[in-house]
Image 1 (tube, protein in one colour):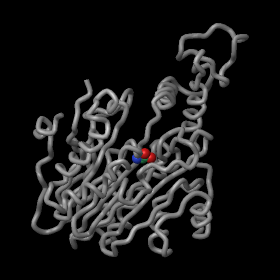
Image 2 (tube, helix red, strand yellow; image 1 turned 90 degrees about the horizontal axis):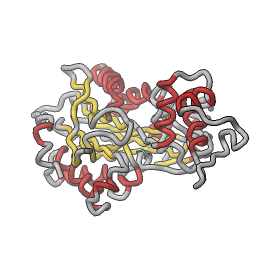
Image 3 (cartoon, helix red, strand yellow; image 1 turned 180 degrees about the vertical axis):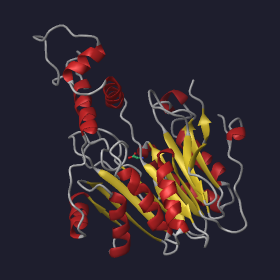
Length: 360
Ligand code: GLY
């Protein structure tokens, strides 16, 4: 376990006497943090700020883990989850498995602000969004549809047979890339290699974003398309208030990205806030939650190697941390353990997370 070994990589504490504007998010949120900071600087509400930030990622067809262009369920249908919490009013809202709406974070905010419910799912969530004028749209892009078809093609029985490619009557197979180029004409090699990777190692991205303003107010949001190729109706941790997101105005906020099922088994975001309430730093609290995940696997690194999970924590005094189970993401996924930060005086940028284990 690398808790101590990882210390030199830890971003020095950012504790401060007076609150200042600061936004923290998962690594895919550099633009989101910058946008949220813009809203904070203009005097906007902290929840409006983080929702405006993550909307950029939700609407980005190239982020295949969130919103429009997110990888679909096993039926080829994109189902999105989101939750939000508003520190000053101590309220929250969430939507789960909502289809056809590009910005589920906005719907979660509406559930919070305009209803006396906290969570809407599926068909009801879509009807609610449409009642507020949101158009129902096709959330699949050419790229995410390609990845879904690739996944179906790569699903095989024990003899290696797949219904989604020509059978024994077909010509002998070409080398893999040539075969894929023939099966999916019109896509370049890089896109095909990406689609093959996500088809065979289903990812779960997500963005979590949290803000603190100069008045000491805080809010947080998490939004995702969830686990690729999931069973229709599957919810991960992102829409579960207390799991993929928690914020207590007296303490701070926390959120997660990665394998939602494993986060739910430790109720990660709530656990982190309670640990911070008891005096742990954001870094210590997030690592402690990851140790609980590890404990659920008897600290067996081989089995833990199958999953990625990251936490982000922002304390009310402005100290923050990102913490990941592993220093690098699992097979094929690019990048190490990082998160994004934007402070009022600087550019939005990525920083290294602390981590529990090193992949060999
Ligand atoms: N953390 C996102 C998910 O598991 O759905």
